[in-house]
Image (cartoon, rainbow, N blue to C red; front, side):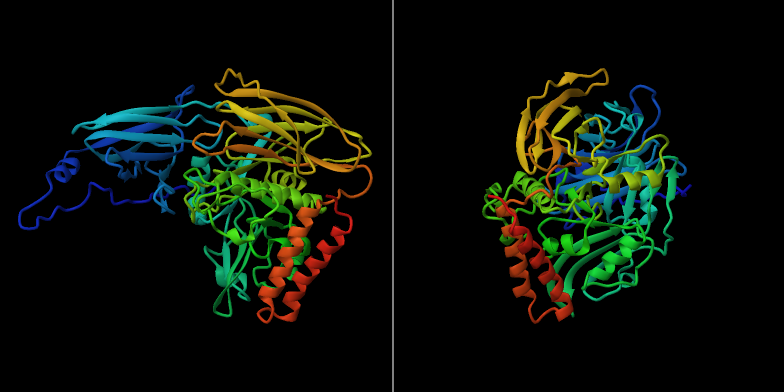
Length: 546
């Protein structure tokens, strides 16, 4: 087991010296902070009363964010304080399963407690005077996914290895891949981008069903020979070695990864090199919940806006695309790759530690048969026996088989299961080859545990080869979207699925643009990888349909 003895020491807002300038102080400020009290509390399971780890937000009446500390002798409270805009703010601590305390000013104090996706969030406002206050914050589990054989993970994390035991337990994650290497310069070996201690390629157990794989590299190239020249990002997770490799070119990285059982995780769909690395590197995973999808307000409305597909009907608004536009762009890019024959498996990666998002906010659930093990989980992720979520749970089968199954000569897709959520769902959709072919109105039947469940039972005739997925959405609140998305099942009937012309044309145009942009910047060998991708898409265009 990993040592959990780690406590983050914070300077609390109330711990400062008041200095007078010409004997004058603002009375309101003096009153707000001199009339301070200690707020102590415990987060507990509403049923068993066991003390729980959690993510805790504390905000004073004047809007100031406060950070609790753990009262456990070996407890920990790790601070996350990141702002990416006035309303894109993440200010919390992840707490071990111990009592906590925080010094607060007099007045109303708002506390919000969350524990992963399977407990109902709790918000409580406490009025504090000058005396210590003790509170108990009960969390209720609305669903138990491990009891059904499903275990969650986050494949993209920018947190220190020593932070991960605390963070995993506080976010109710079972498998994590913190980055040990982060390469941002072209031609730099991963060893030059080391972000943590030397680690061995072996699972590190936080608990029986909580595992860290510590050797993972992100190639996120922003600079080339000391000058800005963005290429993009790809992650190597479950890495066994190969940290001496650099990029570009990327083929050697892909070969080394696949020869040793590592997986290539596509970070975001709009990077410059994304349409190249999918066919050339034979990427394995596609982050359907990526690190621009946050708990707090969506911020990057114009990032890579010049790559927006003009014919894909992506929603835009003032300043660029909307949050739904970004999510939909990701979905449609994923569908376009599937239609081109690249059977990427979906995953969720938050980039937690860099952006205003908690680790595990978007996550992937993998089905594990029998007793949990890391080997079973990573094999299930690679097989596509999974779904991605930012809120709801999606438990579906295709012709009585798990997601990821490949069917031969099956002329109909029978989709069954349930979509479950802590709040009522807005809609459930069945997608075939990128088209919404069925929209299901959820029944939102209340469950005994306090969630809502909606049955899915659809039979779809298939005349040609196809892939099928299911997705569902909470009712949108203030233009925010919480969703779940299954991995695809594949039906092989009459050869490969045919790409849509607008999809493959977009990839052709993107590669042509990148070849021009990289001309006389990359070497002939490096530029050849873009040309190889262009030729692949041009060949696919010969069979494209309108």
